[in-house]
Length: 214
Image (cartoon, rainbow, N blue to C red):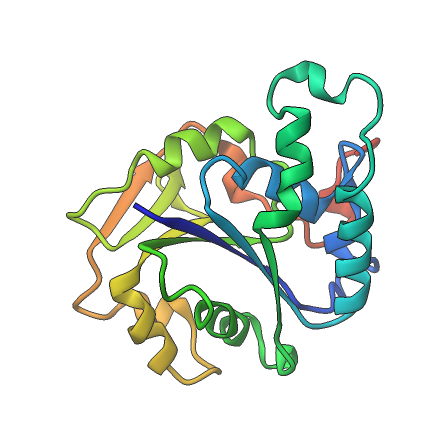
C-alpha cells in the first residue's frame, strides 16, 4: 500500500500577517514540523506551493541540509540518517493559479499523485498535531472505505485520507468547487474516526491562535 502526502502551502496567509509555511512552531518551520511527522508513513511528501514558492524551497533546502542542534536526535523520533534523507522524499509542485483557492491547489497536487493508493491531505497550518496521531490515523485505512476523516467529540476535522478511486472525481470538479461538494457524491464511502486528539480541530489562522512562546 502506497501512501503519499499532499500538503497545501500555496496561499497568502493574509489573516496571520506572516507567512505560515515558514513561521516557527517548536523552533521549526510549520512545514518542516509536518514533514517530520509524515516521513515514516508516506513514501513521498508533495508540497503544493504558489505564493513565495522560491522562499519555501530555499528555506526548506537550507534546513534539510544543515546539521540540527545538539540533542535533536535524542528524542529517538528521527535518526541522523533519516534527517538527511528527508530531502529525497519532498517534492514541490508549483500551482500558478493558487489564488483560485485551496481546492484548486488540491487538484494541482493530486495530478502528481496518480501512483499512490492513498493521499494524506494536510493543511500547512496544523503543525501542532502530535506524531502519534499519524500512527493511529494511517492504521484506520480499510478497503471498505475511500474517505477517512478524523473527528473529536463528533466534530469533523482534518487531515484526510483519500483513496485513489476519488482522484478522478476530484480532478473532474470545477476548480471553484470544494471537498464538501465531493463528499456528497453517492460513491463516497466515509469512515469517521473518533480520535482522542483535540488538536485536529485547530488551524493556526491568526496570531491569536498561537500560544505564547510557540
